[in-house]
Structures are given as structure tokens and as C-alpha cells.
Image (cartoon, rainbow, N blue to C red; front, side):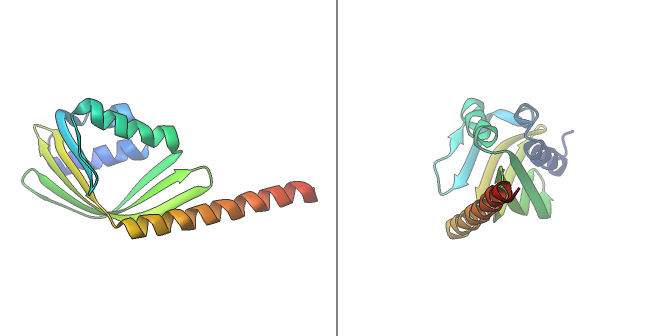
Length: 142
């Protein structure tokens, strides 16, 4: 698989499956990954460290791709990413830029709005608290 759009789609699917090894097989050794405006992670080891956090702190990830377009080796995605941990869930809008060379991702840049991410996280925490309270109340009623 070397077609850039197919590589990016497979990469996002691997992340959804929390299969970090499969995702890493789709990136170049000299990859640059950046959640703008945070500092970039450069190189396979640095990107692997970032991706492993997804499985260390999360129990689920979803990338709902609304639009995907390719122009040569550049792929643009407009999507809603969903981060999960137990009953916590945060959904937020993301625009991603990927560059693919020789069937591997060499650049991955995600852009999102911090305010939206923080609001989604607060909403997710609130929902998780309500779910936890309902579970606790249900145990006492039984």
C-alpha cells in the first residue's frame, strides 16, 4: 500500500484499534509529528512514545473522518477525534496534514482548538461523574 490516502486511512484505523505497532509500521523512521502549537516529536522513537500514551492513559480512540483529500503526497483530513478512558469521553474537531513518501508517513500535523478540547474534556468528565454516581446509587438501592 503506497497510495497516500490509503496509508493515512490505514494509520488512523490502526490508532482506532489501539494497535500502535501497526500504526508505527506506516510511518517513516524520520517522521515529524506535531499537535500544533506544541513542540514537534521528531523521529520514530519520539513518536512511538507519544502514541504509547494513547494506550497507557486511554481505553479507546476514534477518528471520525468527515473529509479526506489528497494532492500528490499530501493528505488533508477533517475529522472529529474521540478520546476515551472508562466512561470518560471527549470529542473535538481536528484538521490533520499528512505527508507520505514511499508508502510511509513522514509528516503528521494535527490542528485543533484548545478551548474546544478543554470544553470537551470538562463535558466528558461531567458525564463520567454522573455515570459513576448512578452506578454507586444503583449499588446501594440493590
